[in-house]
Image 1 (cartoon, rainbow, N blue to C red):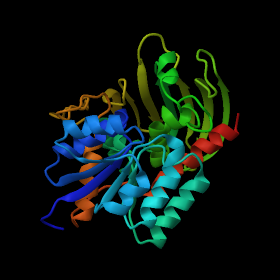
Image 2: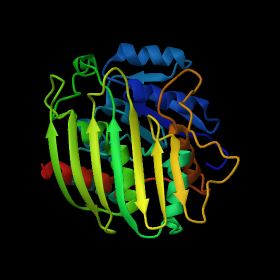
Image 3: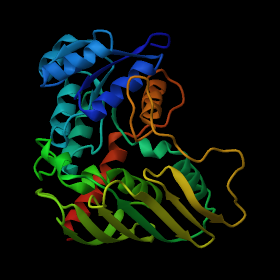
Length: 337
């Protein structure tokens, strides 16, 4: 394994599935052995783009025929749990996209399946690799900000009605869960990573501007296990295009604001005795993986970390026990309205 390529198979050929394909295709230590989608035409088009990768329209058949080290689950949210468990039980390691699942109960089932089958389960949390996020994490871990008083998180994005209409699952409670799972889960993951479990919340949510079952706007007051107070505002009702995704940390010895559209800019940094290092590019660029152009960066770093772990090198991955924390927080937020 040290010298051979790590073999991946992908289920789900939507926009994020295309991103996984392009990242794996560009990695010299990765090999894509199969792709799967119920829309065989869609899978076949991607296969042609990537030099004839084996295609399937049956997940069970693919698992029964291929030899792979990792199955990438990149399907609609409600399918994550059962597909992950099926792959783990068939002897594969699994990388599952966010959200890990739609309930913490399902997350626990997934973790139990990984443990009982002695397999690895990873969750995609690519924003943890953003340069501004890592700088803030380092400052927090080294207690540079002292006691943290408050955190403010704003997710001010646009999704037009067609975004929901063109999908059989977006905007539907049973299949998507809600905007907290789709638009906010990466932000909530970072808040829990930095400040501990969410221990109290009060929320107001509404559907203001779309014909959907789930909320498109909400605001929450938060308290984390380390005592930090917080606020969370999220919406998909911003006019015309995404405006901002930001986190502001207010501490005893400093203030940090990470902003931009995708947490890819340091907008404010004032930390006692800890200025920003010189000569670092603080902006994560939109991804460009050869055959795929996208907006959110760092899926390549997720894949690199998994390959490094499989090959016995140093790594920074997010496993299922870490992934379940943001799902528990989202459940608390929905239960607090």
